[in-house]
Image (cartoon, rainbow, N blue to C red; front, side, top):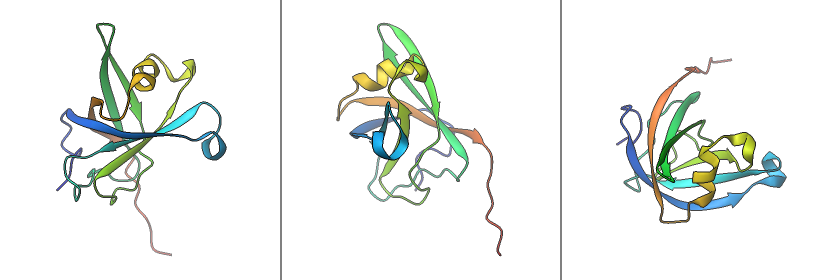
Length: 118
C-alpha cells in the first residue's frame, strides 16, 4: 500500500533526526518519518515533492520538500531540511520536533521523471 500518493493530509510520526553537515552542507538535517505500515511505501515517483504542516504558537505553518528516500523504501520517508532561518518559518516547527512528535504530510505535484533505456 502507499501512504502519500492520494493528495490527502496524513499524520506521520517523526522517528529520528540526523545531522548532515558533512554530506549535504551546513545547517541541514534529515528528518525520518514513519509511514503507517512497515511495508508501506510513499507512492511518490522521483521528482514529486511533499508538503509538511504543523502548528507553532497558534499559527499553521506549511513547508515543501523533496523526499531523499527512494520511492520503494518501505516504512519510512526521509526529508532533507534546512535548519537555519533561510528555511522559512516551518524550520522553527521542525527543529522543535522530537522523536514521537507528529505532523501532517501530503504528496504534491512535481516533475515526472522517466528513466529512458540506454
